[in-house]
Length: 322
Ligand code: 13P
Ligand code: SF4
Image (cartoon, rainbow, N blue to C red; front, side, top):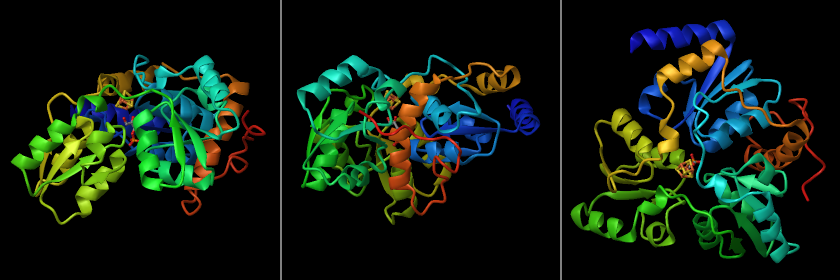
């Protein structure tokens, strides 16, 4: 394996490339990745990098977001079949129908959505800033899509806003059931149960901590507890087990795996870089419209993070969404 790592690192230097990896990727990808983290962190890094090529070890919408944020860079997705089943649950017609049934209400989309969908939403969010973004709108009602469970979790945390949700969901996270949490609590009474907000409400409401993938990892690093049950995709468990050998991690159940996140291998990354293949492109006028939605999120989320605004990156956001 060392050979391929060396070859990738050499190509990265030669071509001025960075590799961004989501924490659901096969853990071996971290050996070549420059940045590993959740969707928010990776989109911040995509906006910030000076590299000429971004190799995205994640799913399609993540690479598409990176391209929208850095239109002059070459963005490569090592395996093009890496889609997100949830993002594909809503298209432009379905979004328009949802909005027309609920007129005059601000529309927030999860970053797990297509560029077309983002182009007609007011602002997007990730699981780590969702509460802050929805709260920032100061609206009594908000439309949220595609993830109904993330939307309802936000509503439960804010109390002051009605979140009207589109019926999308993540098939991987919905495999986790309340009964799994109850059984694990019985078996490991001292363990903390750490859960992603894409899980069903009956799961999040009986967990000890609910947060993004990076949020879960941060909680495990900082907590004085010694035992943790992980209720999200297995990539998070693999990294925690590797990084914190003094603590014990247990997957809530077997097979909580997002197959689409697992396609990329080191060989695929090497081939993508070598041949500069599987480039993600977003049509210019669409990208401009979707950028407004993403930039409004980054501006709200990053005030203190030194992330350049759209104007500083010399790409102008659209005048606002419909
Ligand atoms: P995070 O933003 O928490 O990394 O989640 C992305 C995702 O797709 C979870 O299923
Ligand atoms: Fe999409 Fe679910 Fe996979 Fe995340 S885990 S990328 S929401 S299908």
